[in-house]
Length: 306
Ligand SMILES: [Mg+2]
Image (cartoon, rainbow, N blue to C red; front, side):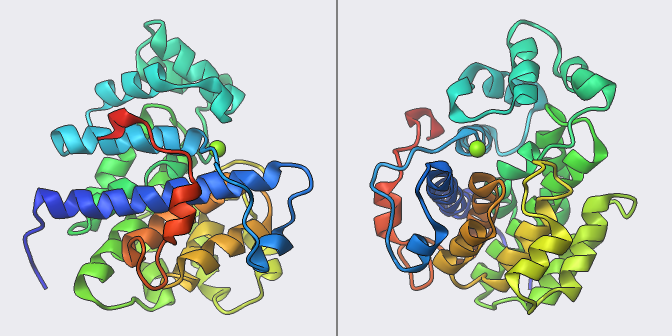
């Protein structure tokens, strides 16, 4: 099926994805507060509002604002936006703070990103955590989603795994949003195969997504043992796990986020990736979508998001 995707439709899909990403981030980060138990969420008990969002959401808002303004990623402009809007107390990792400080003080982003981690570049999960709305925006083209995701990743993540993580999440979010437009819930194995096809086969992220196919239907603990849960904050130990969750719970946003909380690890980021991917399919306030009560509990997004 071919169709024209109008700018308003793109933005609606991307904003729904951002709602899911930010609620997942904000709710997930509540479980780093001492005394909070995943079992509470499973029993329907929500943490007291407001739920503050973190770096995942701040950077995703910059990605969405860029697309709303120009319809594509300008790497120079995005690097400056990330750097100028960075509020370090939002949970940025020390490596990210260093790169963004370099950019803010005039270092060109290719130099700042390449210098990170002793010249290897970052393979952290930070380029993946912010990219789902971009994938939803390009619901009509996984190849466009992949190319734009790569551009959005490169300004901070020079390592091939960090970039592959962003491409994987964007393609998953593109396929999810496309499925919503088509009214056809994709088979989980087909969704993951579509993601794997877009990835550099030399990457561990690619191998992880392939393994995730074999783990469909398996218990969460087994999946975490095989794929990770983001506890190393790398793309390699985050992205395949999150896409397993998103593919498995694509029609049920609350269940998808609960799975991230139950899995532990880098919960704000896993719930942001999963939430952003799933919400592009479910929407907000729909059956299986982002619950309006959860959205109301989330700290408001920055006004500049647009
Ligand atoms: Mg975070």
